[in-house]
Length: 190
Ligand code: 5GP
Image (tube, rainbow, N blue to C red):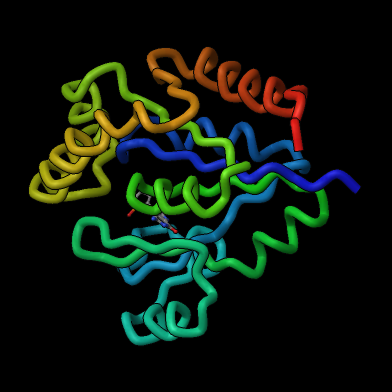
């Protein structure tokens, strides 16, 4: 059976990435990798669905056991990708989506040269700040931290294979599907 594609997706928080991926994931050919994190759950977040919410000790144990494909520190918390489910789903032919920040994404691109990398950009930093304020899930202090993080991340977008600007949601979803379609049609030389 044809193996699935590993798709690394990064975007500053508040870019509409969650909405785009929710649409993409309606297709059963995709599997969303549930990350581990030491951050506290937000209202409505479910353990094992949105994240595996771990203590720092539990997180470090997974690293020590070599069970993380990558991990990184972001805004004072650790985030990482548990490896075993990814290997299993790729073998089953599923396209696996990793929704991770840039440091982790760069690690995956290095370790897995076949991975497809996509960076979703906001139309502007100001648009991003407004979306975060409207979302209302973070304090102003956390929002400013995340905006600063976005200003650091956006230039790194050039190191990804594909950049999608989320100016219009329907277009961004169509662009995402087009990238995956093209990658599926790509001639592999190995
Ligand atoms: P949030 O706290 O908003 O859920 O996520 C903060 C950032 O951490 C986002 O950019 C998200 O994509 C990233 N992130 C989530 N899971 C992982 C992961 O497993 N590894 C890495 N490196 N980043 C992650």
